[in-house]
Image (cartoon, rainbow, N blue to C red):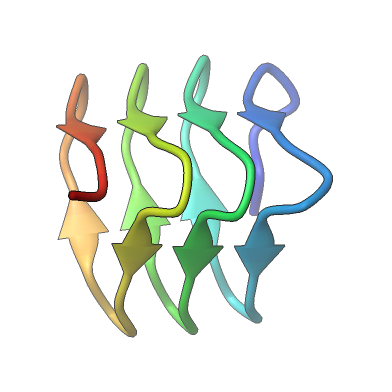
Length: 65
């Protein structure tokens, strides 16, 4: 489930059964694999990869490189 207040870029690749919490941002070319769970107020940066079944808590920032 993707919270309505979350921002997900059109080029982000969200696979099945992904959860994105309130006020979180998923930037372009980010990949969230099956069953990934992102908490509230998180940032998944450009090109970041969140693997299958990974759970991030609230207010976490993930970047690539």
